[in-house]
Each structure stands twice: as structure tokens, then as C-alpha cells.
Image (cartoon, rainbow, N blue to C red; front, side, top):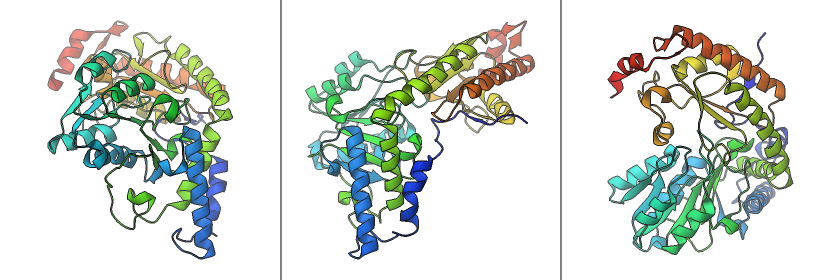
Length: 405
């Protein structure tokens, strides 16, 4: 029987036992609406308050009221960007700056706002996925409302220099939002020390439940709500509160940050270093992203003369869950926007593989991953029309991919 190895922790993580236990009473016994005055409602409200304090503490926020619970990371991103440019704190400024490698929750929000007349600048990144700070300095002006740059990339793991970005934004009177969905619980973040005005996060990326996230909003920033209703979450995210989700998020962020973080980062980075070393022995393989400033659990590769989909399906047959940035056979002919932005050639970008490890992975998992990936890559290359005499033949690749251009 083949092993089962879950190596797609950037997509979602398994809920931890402590989170599951913390949530249970709020799914069964204390099911009251937190706005109610009787005991089951008061218990729910108390739990919510405690969860808010835990999130604030984990981020280094000045006060718990700066935390707004949302339905997840995508909602938090939308609320931050759209809510800010439509709100009174923007003082009529309309220009938005973001990067070409953001998550679609940010990119598509910006594209929608462009259609509504908000000018957007998409910053370039270098070959390792770092944004161009000089370009940021050139394009920012006193018309810029918000700069939104992710803390760490979900495909290649590259970490941005958040403090430097916030300083440039603030020098021009703009606010700085960071999509930290991939980063929270996996790297050190402190909103005050880093000068972050708004920060998005999602519970299921650090062993909490799905469908719950949060937006840190620095005190004094007024946002326009996305959802109108009963006025919950300071009127910014109306709807009866997902109390169990909030409790789960609070427990998960407490477990994932603080004194546990360095130990976990060290363990996961050790596993990832071993994985990268093993996989880079496969010929014609590229390691993508910043080799140093990156999330500890993210290992991203590109194999020449391979289609990512075949890779994922064959790894799945071997009991391995991984992911690919490319979507060549799933209705979209475009390889990942992130891999294109870092300048990978079209024909190579299709053969991408992202393996993301977590604290629940073991050294044995890593040995199995290295062995199976090498086997699958060799098997797929043996069948590939662009693999000739033990190396990629790009003249064949050009014919094969001509329909993309």
C-alpha cells in the first residue's frame, strides 16, 4: 500500500486537535446569538471577545477592536481595498498600487475597481518574485490611496520587505495593506513594528477552520462596508457571527504564533531544505522564488518538458497531494500568472510543482516525496514529445505550444 503524504499545506491545512476541541462547545452547548442577552448568548459573546484578543495579540495590534472577523481571506482583501477607496479615509484619492503576483482576491478586486474608474498600477517583480521598490517610488504620488502587497507569495513562497514598502506608502500619505493569508503562523509579523495599516488572514492556512478570516484595520481608518445588515463587526461585516469559527481561529492563531513559531519554523524549514536538495538532483529542474527570504514550508519547482497536470495526477496515484501553478488542461491555457511575472518562458512554466510542508509532516514523508517525484518526472519525460535523448528539445516545444501565442 502506498503512503499518504499531504504536501499541499499552502492550499489548506488539517484542523488541529486543539482547535477542534475549542470549537465544539460553540457548536453544541453555547449556540446562542451573541447579540442576545441571555446566558447562551452572553457565553457566545464572551468567547468572541476572547478570540478577538488572541488575534490582536498574535499580530501585535494596539487593541482588539482593530480586528474585524470576515468570512475568510478573500473577503478580508475585498473589504480592505474596496472598503478603503470607497470610504472617507481615502479623502478622494483613487490610485491603487499592487503587484503582478498577488492572489486573485486582490487582483480581481483591483480589476473590478479599474472598471469603476480607479487607476491601478501593477508592480513588476524580479526573477525571485521580489517587488521592484524603485518602481514603487516612481509610480506613487499624492493621488495614491492604498498600496496592497502580499506578505508572502502562495506559489513560490517569496517574502516581501513589508517595512520598506510601508515607509514608501506612508511618505506619500497612502495606507499599506498586506494580504498575509499565506504568512500568518509561518513567519514573524508585527503590524506596529512593520507599519502595516491593514492585514488580511485566513484561519484554514494555519490549522484553523475554513470560512473564517480576519482583517486588521488600524484604529482611525474608516472603511465602507461590503455587506450591510445588522451592524456586526463594527458594521463592516454584517451577519450573525460565526462564533465557533472565531473561537477556532483564535485558538489556531495562538497555537501558531508566539513561542511556538520559531520551533515550528525551524522544524518545517529543515524538512523543506531536505526536500529541495533531493528534488534538485532531478536534471533540468528549476527552483523558483527567493532561496533565502521565503516561507519555511514552501518548495516550488519547474521541470522542463513536463505538463503540471500529469504530474499532479500521477503523484495522487502514489498517495501524494501537491499542486501546480499551471492549468493547461483544466480549461485555461495560461500558465500561472506568478510564474509568468517572474519571467519563466511559457513552455517551461507549464511544468510547475508546488510542495508545501507543515508541522505534521515527517522526514519519512520527505524521503517518499523525493523518490516518487523523481519516478513520476522520469516516467512523464519518457512519454514527452519534447524530451529527446535525455534532455528537453525546445524546437519541438515551440511547435507544441504555438497555439498559446
